[in-house]
Length: 95
Image (cartoon, rainbow, N blue to C red; front, side, top):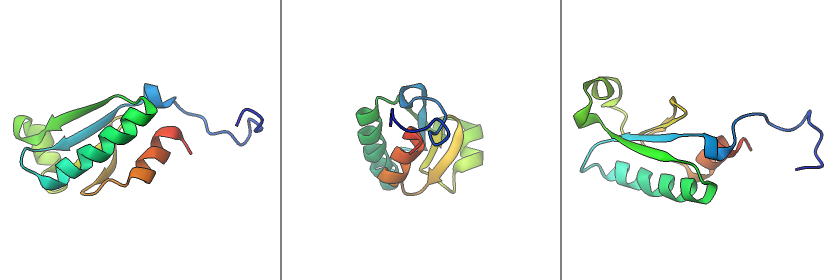
């Protein structure tokens, strides 16, 4: 990619400067599945991630309770219900 013209390079933060947030709740099997994907992709790319529980945050509960698990990238909703590993990786790498 170093030989690629700057016109064709994607601009944006490096993966390690991103933040992935998993919004879910205890006992949610889809949340557990999402966490496995997030852990894998973030570990491979060196991306920090955090987990938020809708049962402990009324605002998150009101906003997302029908969509959990919800994945945010840099505070913006990336997906909900199912996390696609390839799509998350593309989002984090700009590729």
